[in-house]
Length: 184
Image 1 (cartoon, helix red, strand yellow):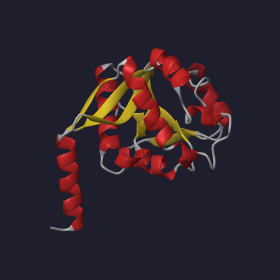
Image 2 (cartoon, helix red, strand yellow):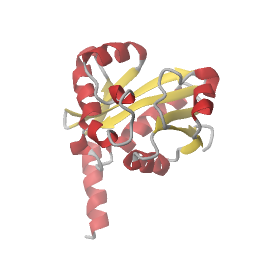
Image 3 (tube, rainbow, N blue to C red):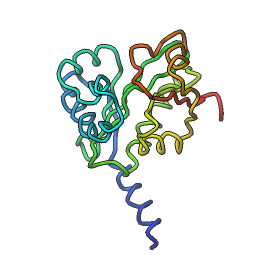
Image 4 (cartoon, rainbow, N blue to C red):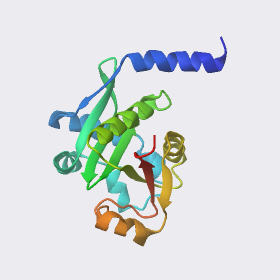
């Protein structure tokens, strides 16, 4: 069996033991842990002000549980990642897509994005959107591989997108990605 086949087989096994469920308020400490687990990856290029979206704690959990739909990805009944959805008109905003760093590269991020796509299609959304820093190579590769396209790189254009829907979410230097749900 080739290395590629072994990798595919391991991903299939991992996927068969994977489920996604709506987060409960008491999951938010675990979700904050997923976000914090990669915060050091962002520190070299994210402004200190914006690091508060990566070095998160209880206040972040309280605020964000009220304003986003969080979902937890579980592998063998253990939380391994999260995705959050918000709907602005006909657009779904994916605000947090995080895996515990121990589970990166196992296909769980793709599963979370496919889940978000199914939810968005079921709700009649036209696009899924997210923002990511151009130096976050790991995230950029995953989003482009999934089929997202970079649609805005300029701060003012991102802040104006969809009547300013992202004003409260923008981080300096981040780019706007879009996945068109109307194709295929």
